[in-house]
Image (cartoon, rainbow, N blue to C red; front, top):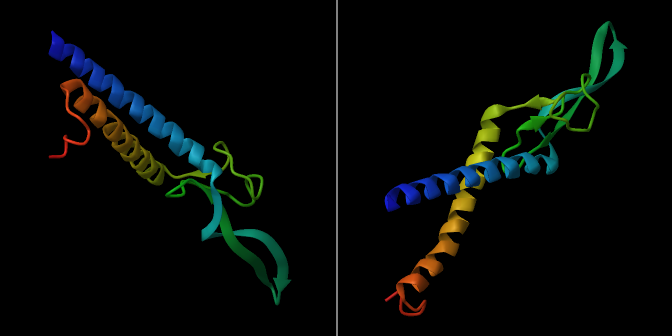
Length: 128
């Protein structure tokens, strides 16, 4: 019975870490930069019957891997929105995995001194 509680507690902790990691990944879309993808943001006209465009680096959002890319000509240019811009699933999954690892690492570092204290070990003698 006690192991069932600890199993449920561990599952709840992992699920909450996963939800928090997804929220952090979504919030990272506020970190915006340009490039490396290029898009056509303007048409200069025709020269000798050939269309001349001015490609520029696209605005993208997400950290560490950009997952939201501006769609020039379709969405509001130089602004990111989930509804109208290009959402890339796999970089988003990579960001969630990154933030999940960070959260689990922080949780393990915080939990370790608590466990040593419960067992009765001093933090100075625990490493010996």
